[in-house]
Image (cartoon, rainbow, N blue to C red; front, side):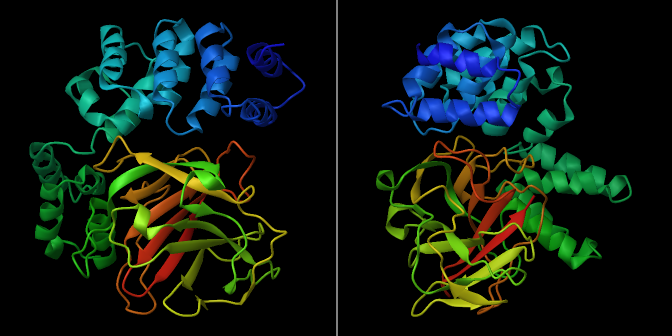
Length: 407
């Protein structure tokens, strides 16, 4: 039986829950010689089963690259009726002319509840410039919010005027921050004295891309999409045993594990050393952060007990790595993420689940720039050992990492 038929059979099995179907199909396709790229593309090109198409697209979106196959699949889905929804998962890898084609299809018939809406949503997130000229055809509040990223200066000025005229409309000034352009940053700096709550203003400025106490970037350009791959496929290591102290859960004494080490020489961020981030291997939820001095010298754990890494406990399914490829939205996504259903990211500005202040380094007391986010969604190797999303911040001068959890 071909993988396509096996996939359709699993998708149609009424005895399985949706998460079980997803896990079984990912396991099935991951066992193929190319980790399932060809089989997933063939399914998307040939199947008439909406459920099977979506599971195949979910798997394909877990894998880096494969742009030719993803484009071929999306081209077929474009003319496949309701199955076009599955193309939404492939948007970050699709060429501009195909994205323009999807936008043209939607604009020609912008019905509420159109199966194209999911694709248009992802285009707004990943390529807002291609959708923004047709914003008047879009009714969804969420899609409009995604189009804030990189908006023209005139819109910044319009939101500022609305904020002042409509009794300090917070949504309007938040929109200024989410535009994330130099003009948006300058506008927020200019209105500093109009805020009674200093912390509120600082969060907005960080959201726009600037750390308020040092006026350094709140992130590290450029931004990359991350995908979990085998250990040998990337220098950015995930999981695996590490020597030296690691944070320990104060409730159950379970040790943390390395989630990710960003290899300094493999990214253009000017990192002084490799940056490592840690998270708990239990589900107690006793603490919302880990703070660790990675170097130079001996590792040191701030704020809470520490112990020794336990190779038998895992936060990542095996010793893996994170492959990076350029993120299509280099300005910064202006729509909140959904924890457990978002892509990994290294560099750029954070796509928060819930907007929050950047942590401060316990050594130098300065606000720390964002470096990475790791989501708990599925991988080709099995489930992650945590729920929600981890946001990773790095103080380059002090060698201190903070991992912050949101769900």
